[in-house]
Length: 334
Image 1 (tube, rainbow, N blue to C red):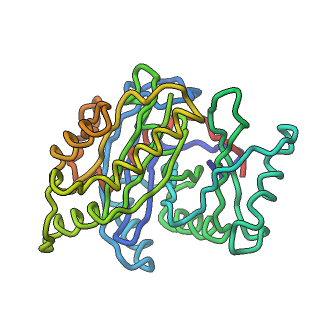
Image 2: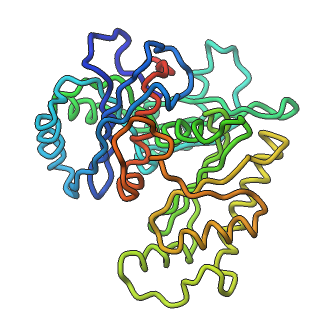
């Protein structure tokens, strides 16, 4: 997404990929085993995840201390660093591409979001990525906007912990690197991420984001509460049409993909969840949607990498995806 330095300096092996949320800091250390640094898509045979950890840190003031200590303890000082922003740190808009020459597109998209953000355009960092589509449809783009001050603060934090920030990405593009490993036939994959009451829906083809959205359903929220030890009545997947609201949202996403992006359905849906009744969810979703549904286990895909338990996979999913993309060229200069 945003490349913070036009000129690259000599970096230690691989890259640290870092992301922050209200509970802590997710971090992976990825290295490449291939000399090919110009690959557009992530390749599981050329990238190895050497470390994957989640560092509890609920107080943002403590991030420098917690992350700095980890970097020092694991001898990662001066490593190249890629930060993945989480969805609450930016706005993502699905818009018609402006009809302007390519060299004017970057400026044009800034004006597209001028009235869509709640802070002055001069205080915004704006970028975009194109969405593949059926030729008869008008071209679409996703435009990303975040506060420039937030990026500057992130750069200062990385410098303070002795990491060399070179790249800032967003969660959706990081996750697309994972889908490319799941899409051997290049037919498209839906990644379904279930967390505390929110469902992330992402459809990608060939490692390119086609559709992304977030929805909330009461049943998934109750499953999350139950997984945290709360007593919640009636959370049986197969009872009383509990999954109907989620099924509806998934079906709408699939219909949009088929209408606007690709005339055929994605090859499968891959579920990433630590919530209860995972296997029942897979079975019921597959039955109701008529499409293959699988549980995600990255250990089956990451050859030669450190073993990553399911809690770590959930906590660190976006930075794992970002690590898989360390061979990619930077998308834009910032």
